[in-house]
Length: 75
Image 1 (tube, one colour):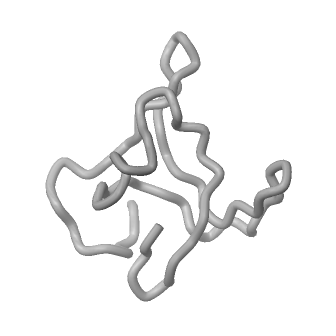
Image 2 (tube, helix red, strand yellow):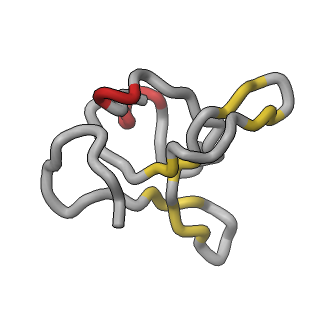
Image 3 (cartoon, one colour):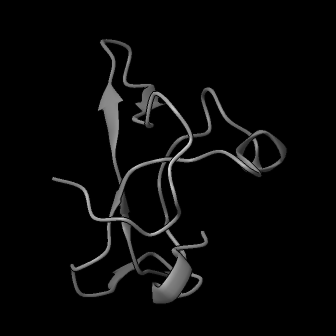
């Protein structure tokens, strides 16, 4: 994921019910970048992608309602 001045970061977000890698390219999502990296199985996750867990356990991503500059702070 491209976070502008913070650089490129990786996440182990479990979002495969609604999204494929191809559908995520160019999509803006919200993520927490100031947590320390965390080992998830054999993968080092650097950011926490924000989403809503639905009743069936699927995750819907939280995203801005209009295009915003990459890397801005979430309040």
